[in-house]
Length: 353
Image (cartoon, rainbow, N blue to C red; front, side, top):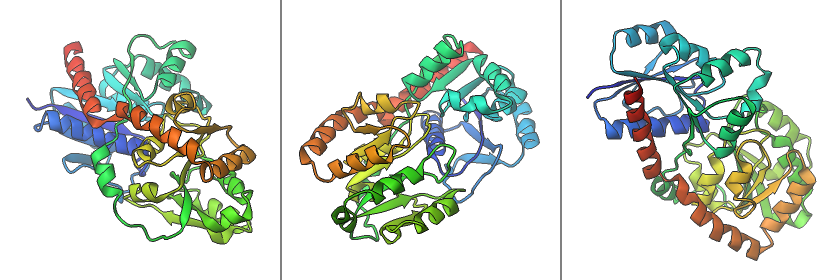
């Protein structure tokens, strides 16, 4: 039976949220090939980033509303959580919407509209979190009730492993940070400082690679240019296949101030890459499995990060233990489990109409 799905995202700029949207759309279509999926982006839509073939991109909210009113058997998904998407989704479907949270809930309280967004989300028929810490914050700190559940972000392991075999245009050993260059959530300066503090012999042996693009790239470039190690730091820009970089790196780094959960470490683990992550909210402790999967350092602590970077490339026993642990851990994030949860989610939504 044909069903119409209306996804509303805050922006579309190549981040983890967009990846999860693509997985969600493909899961829906796998279960129901006759489904119609519409995508409306509130803020900025960079068309260089992939959108599934059977998804119809709608350019304006009035156009989306017109399609919505003319359709039946429909579902509205507020996919960017505590953003203007909440209000847009409410205007389209009232409280009969599913909301996805991809960020630390506390990070959105700085917005002037956050009380309204929280109110709308709290009264959604279902709120999806991407980690347990998110769900606990919503329930204990913001009074969300039983309409909250966790669905981990999915990772297509066979596809990642296949793509990871492609060659990269670099022969040197390197540390890798893969992230959108946006200072709202990421801390690039601490990574640069940490690398600058490594012993000279390690700087000569290992480069530092930043994979990604974004609005704050000029500021990152300017900061790098002020460092004596500027010739050893490489900015690749956006790469549609980051997995080849993950497979060939010696150590991955996720230096975040705030996250929903983050796909990068899970994808890195799939490529066999040991990680250093900052103790961001939400999900760092959960992702590390209480420090069994990777090193955790304090946000902004470049001295601690530099020490861990040195350990990662000199202590083979630590690396071996991490790999043994995260190989088992990532089995929770397979696409089959995600697909089953998506089918259940939308089937339950039909029963609740």
